[in-house]
Image 1: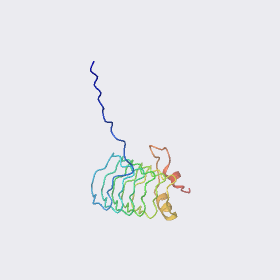
Image 2: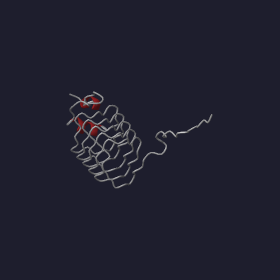
Image 3: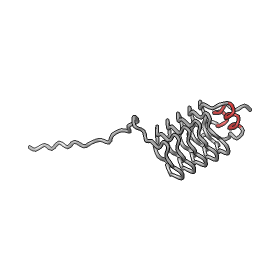
Image 4: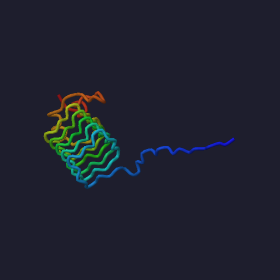
Length: 153
């Protein structure tokens, strides 16, 4: 009797010790929509008009980047570092920003309808600015935007 033993290699699990790095990159108008980019590094990158709609950006590092007019609709930015980022004109509607670090981020003319900022780190000036335009309920978490920001009536 002849016995054949085949050893099929199994695909490796994601290696989070070496996340994707796009730091200092020119990513204008790139399409990352729907992609899994957990813990990816985008610090000091130019991401103007970049599409991250529905992307998984949990734990991503976007510090000191330009994200003007970026599409982050329904993106998961929970636990992400989005400090010192210019988000002017960005679409953050229905995004999950729970526990994200957002200090120094610029939110001029952003769409935050349905965004969840629960336990995000923001300063009082940012909270006041965001509360002035906060509305909606996040479709994933069920949390009202105004409640997640701690807006006063």
